[in-house]
Image (cartoon, rainbow, N blue to C red; front, side, top):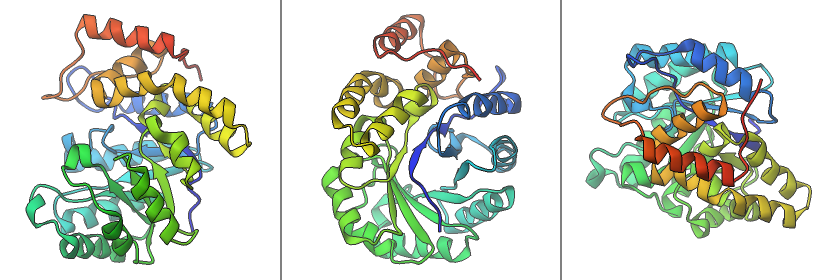
Length: 299
């Protein structure tokens, strides 16, 4: 069993100016964010630029992150790859590094062939081979595939598949999954933009890009909800909408890293072909953060 309740930031991978891994940047960010009541971290998710790293770099980042993450915080490892063989290699590598669970993004390059038969075979083979629980990752904005509730429920029949991170924001689908599974299967919101609505239909928490720069604010939504303070939770949710949009759908990973630099964390560069923000966009981002009441972070 694994308890996924609470808030998890999907930690960006820190790069030096030459785009090499900054292991000190990773450690600094984890140390600072551990000052807040987060349940753990997702390492090498979409915001971690997983697809930009080599095989060796992925192993190094898993190891560096696990060394820095305290034993009382979970480490979820992003392990999506296009082939089942490579995904199995990644989940075993992440498990050796000390991951508590693996988040598996569905293959998508041959999306025309990714029907239920292919997806079920992929996820079940990975779950058979994984030494730790597997979580399904539905991320239609990046993959071009939005798995249906029926597909997710069929895939989730495997006993080692323990949860779902859904970044699509379809609350009807999330509710259908939650309503059809037992309590052992946990659903996490994949964006702060719909955290409170997801919690209200039974999600156990969220893996939220915004939690990297507004951990206190995101945790407050969760705490207000679980503490039966709906008015406070609603107010905080609405305050964060624009900031969340800025660092996700609008400007993406470059904006998230720029915000981290602005707020006292190590943001650093993105890997090409991703592009840094220009000065005008950076100024607009800072204005949005200030308006949302997102403050500098300190260890």
